[in-house]
Image 1 (tube, rainbow, N blue to C red):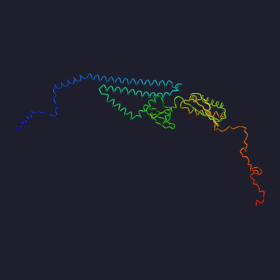
Image 2: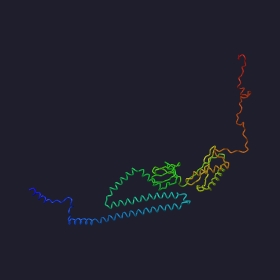
Image 3: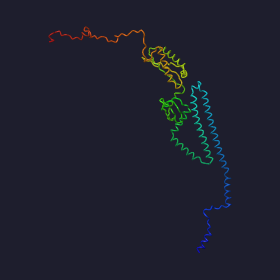
Length: 363
């Protein structure tokens, strides 16, 4: 009995082996292939349109980026050629040198190329995401929040960067200029978008953040003024003093290298101060930027030598020797004899004691 039921159950449940793949009939395969072909036929036009749109966006973005960068590069090269054309002329002396203009133009070109690439590629990326039917609203909102957080967290960095951009655009200073930045002063050795490097008078290097600079005093742009004060005795002839100073200044302006460093005639401004024991004559001259200190030293040197040759005494100098002068009286510095030295002088008699008239009173 048990063998009969087991044989019946075995015949009724012919389960296939778990290791064998399911058998697909030809009709089922044909149906699946037809469904796939229909789905491809239904969506191929959308795929093609999307692909062509993305390719067109990328091609336009790449082409526009190349054209903009080439335009900026040609503009920078034209600026450099115009700077080299005026170099060495009278106009070039009033302008910055070619190397400084080249560095400034290269920095401006780098910033403009970076900004143009960011705008073009960023816009192209958003358009590509839009072609894939991606909702850009959450992405833009997240980017805005991240931008605000980054702006608050890195506000010092953003301030330094923006300050550096405007310093370069406005040409406030360049490499080789002597500036006073308030927090430090010296010669500019490097100009960056975030940090400016200065070399001080003692050779030290200052790293100054552009955002910390509140004022800039450029000592190398335009021209400088050399001012010299000459102190002479109040008894000197002013016309002679003016003549001697003028001759020394004319001789200096005709010699190398002072004829290039002096950008104007040496002017005698006149008396700046008159005191009981001195007079101050002020001299001024317009010089090449950064050369005023050397011109002042040379002008003092020449004026002093001219004064010595002309016999003009300056304040603090030794008096001139006078020929055939009478020798001083050796008794001039002696005091008068005292009136009490003579016993017969009225002063001595007045101090003598009076003798008593009655001799008995003395006893």
